[in-house]
Length: 186
Image (tube, rainbow, N blue to C red; front, side, top):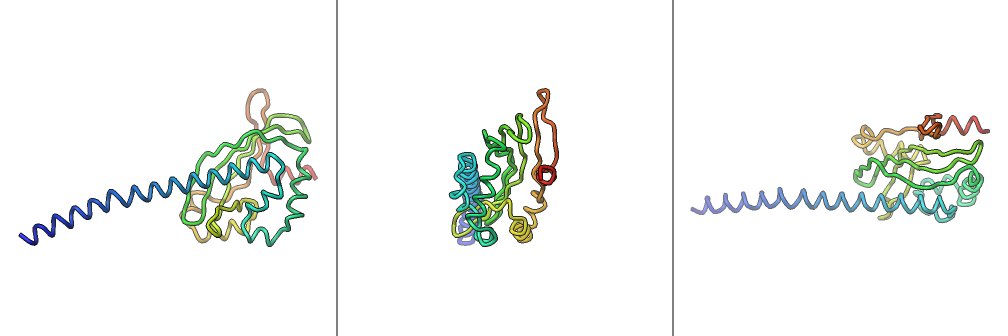
């Protein structure tokens, strides 16, 4: 009789564990994803408003050591007249430990070197540092290090160059990776 009671208690405990733990993990993942979305949205609003000094604070410490606040702000200010951002679309998102990968699309108007509607598709990477999510996207060496520590995430979200599209005759036309456009404009 004692064995039967023990077995029933063990089964009940196991069932409770199987029900409670996954729901806790799902809730935690949902909260982490919401936090990542919030950080990306805030960074987008700061970029859109030209609050580059505040945007610098969203960078991981490794990125801040590589570029000074003044140089970061100046580089972004030089691009200010080239585009006008309208909205951010968050497509696919995954959190793995202290690293998040997010596929995004930024929509806006291109002002230079030509006028038109444009969008950029980009994979964003974030790092949780000191309890806060930091946007590590532009820092290739930081992203490589993050993904080396997260091989499953790296397989699902490998690094990719942001791509630029312009609207022509009502259809999006891929004009290439952002890196090739930077070189062409120089």
